[in-house]
Image (tube, rainbow, N blue to C red; front, side, top):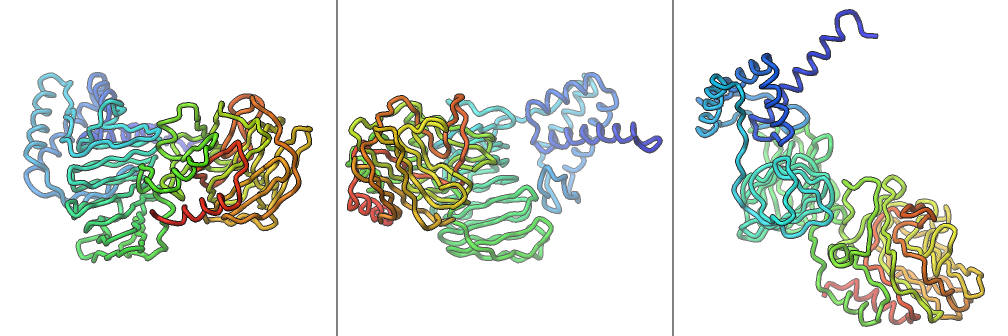
Length: 504
């Protein structure tokens, strides 16, 4: 129960605050189509709102006559500089809007499309919105203005050669070919010499590049982190004119709290950011193909774009599903919290009695029964199941034989956390072997693999029987997943491990 006389006042204040926020977004050029529709409706139906709108147009127009002190904005935006200029174009637009309102009462300032400054290079399951509208799938032009990325990952290249990768959820504004403002989310940038001076502004800092490769993350509390992988950048806290920038060199990182002007050195995290959506043309993929795999998913952009049979499921589609991999990109799996997994309904099963599997895994934690991959479901063993053994944190593989019995082997040591590991298993009709980083870690006698030809494949979880639902989710990343309907040899597995350690 509200104290006497406060309930309606609180409601009125809430409505007024919402209206003022709409006007603020309009004047700052941040309004989307829903905002425009709401403003037009209130201009038509609400005399009090028209009065407020006129008053703010008048104030905004007056600001154009000189400099004005501006307080910090609300948490939905980052603080502007202490002073701002208002261009003559904005002044004229405000005056025109005021005059039109006085005569018709139903005029608002809609932004025109910005200047083209970049092209969309790639987008993986992305929901990219420009000025509130979904970017047309056939339009690769990136213009100045406000963007939101609500799902997936997008990459674009500026006119000066600067390449930027943005991970959802992200909110940002493209200001020019040399500047981008990031309000929320992650981005990485590769800046050639022609793009030196490229700047990323955040709620807490301004990052100025000198021809390098770096990444920026803005958290929900508006704090900022900057990680430099190669070259150098200047990071200037936006606390005041006297704040000195910090120079970050290769393999250095800093964090700046929103309320602080003191940069804090932190450990660089090269595994956190996607730095490219291109799968590198290294020797690893051709070496896999030379062994005639029944299935090979690179777990990157090529996997999604080139194989429509692969389906990715997640509880939250806004969470990025791509991450930095062992080679190029990898798929990110969020464990029980995200319930993400990949389903491959059809692929060529083994009929020879032999079967091999090989991939790279990165564990963020070791959930109970976390599944790397499985052919089958909870109640159907299929041809193999590859997971952690309950709560032990040890890797195991289970293979059903033709006689119906299931053979399993497991490693005695726990799977390391936070490190890329090559894992493999081989069933040759006589023995089931388990490998990690090119070395055999367990083995057991095993007959020919069962001929289970109908069961689908899941990666990152184990399928339930009632459709595309899974459990026992992987928490981490999986890269370069391959199955072979033959028995790989130990020298072949070791050679693939060695190739992945090289950069050629």
